[in-house]
Length: 453
Image (cartoon, rainbow, N blue to C red; front, side):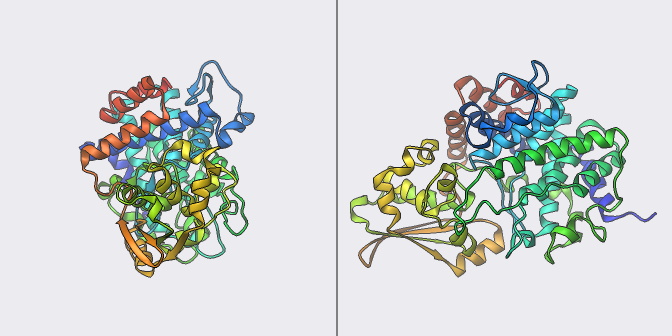
């Protein structure tokens, strides 16, 4: 039988199990895992969003896999579900920056693989290689799929469509070198996918609901259970990704590029997973950074109009001015920029009650104009990034302006490390912060620390 694209994609990524792990990959994986655990631990401890109710679907155990931020344990599938839900709650998670696609991955991959690793007593180099397999595979899946699944009326969640298949491959790579097991794990996952919808994230509808948290939790659980079924002997179609009625045909909507699956995994840039410094949608991050830089230079009393220039998609989807919940605030450019200008900061408390009703922020929101920039839309399509320009006016006179390509503009390596340390410190008590930073520095030696949250 001829080698299919699906099997070649599996084989290419499973080959990473035999490769030395580059220092850049170790560093990226350390940060991605530490970031995800920190976010989920905070959300679980504070019972934010779906973390208030998701335990209703699981049976807590005295022993088992860690539920980050809780004092109980669970089965691997249940722990993946709970940790996936909690990692999504704050919209503080990483984002893939790629010209073909964006979406999140760590919120699915990390909960799934760490639950299995704890259950099986695996860590060190094996865990790191399995994570490498999953994150590299997610990039190729993103490039193969494109953005058609959420253009126009379709509204499938990128995270729910991409990351489970990548996590199912990584899960198989964690427990075995067997490529046939890996193909079955991916096939079972992709062919029975629980793809979430974007119907709850609509300024027109005004509904910002908890389904986004659950969609991610179910995706992480799904990846674990696909691997478990494959280990038990279940099989799936031989071409789950590229077959006539397969994953690409079902979710591509004409944008799919199957040959992108064959990109060299060694060339997949894990640095393209961007870490958020601010607890808001990634489409707000550059604008928040620009607003904070302006707040250092311009007295707010001089400002009576703010113009925020972003790409077309962000100008539409992040336009709400009805801030009825924390989630609405995280998906509002008017709120995020106004808050940063008024407070000269943008932290966790600024996106929770009672900050949402702060009179000065609410007043400035009415002075914010969103502009869908053709230039920034073209740059977003070309790079996958989310650049922004914030302009401040007094009357019709522009006082100052700041452009940012990303939320870490103007920071050197030391500045970026300090920003990450500050993020973990805001999310976690000091002992957990130090354990996560230790993992970020030496992930192959410190995996056990992740189970002590």
